[in-house]
Image (cartoon, rainbow, N blue to C red; front, side):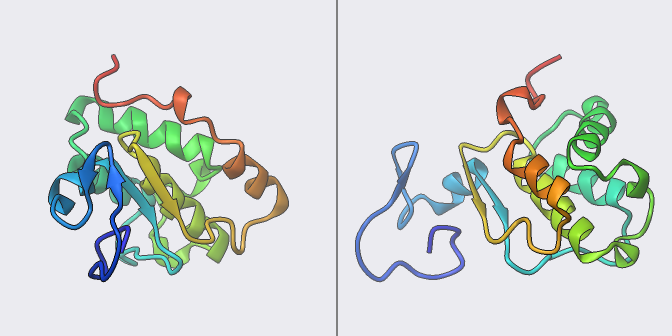
Amino acid sequence: MMTGDERITFGSAYVKGLNLASDMNEISKEIGYCPQFDALLDDLTGRETLKIFCLLRGIRKERINYISEELAKSFGLMKHLDKETRAYSGGNKRKLSTAIAVIGSPSVIYLDEPTTGMDPAAKTSVMEYDLSLYVTQENP
């Protein structure tokens, strides 16, 4: 319900004053989502995947390479960035899915078991990730 995948049957929920029942199109711009099961396209590289999601989030084209590499560094994916996601381990798929969720510094981020399959150091890295350090589309 909170992500718009299911219809709200009872109660109300709001994001930045917008009602999920009536304003989901507007709210979806404010939400980052990492589903329990990775929704990655096997034929794309990590870099291509991040680029697509940056474009969907409205990141300026001249910032996409920088942001993609910063996310890859932050989530320990740099050496895998140009590999097709089909070759990623389960933990690296989770890292990429989590990185996608933070693109554009959304107001709300839903993470469903983001660290499943990750090694202990990667789990710590994800849990200590500081969104305030993230470079948004407005920043130089």
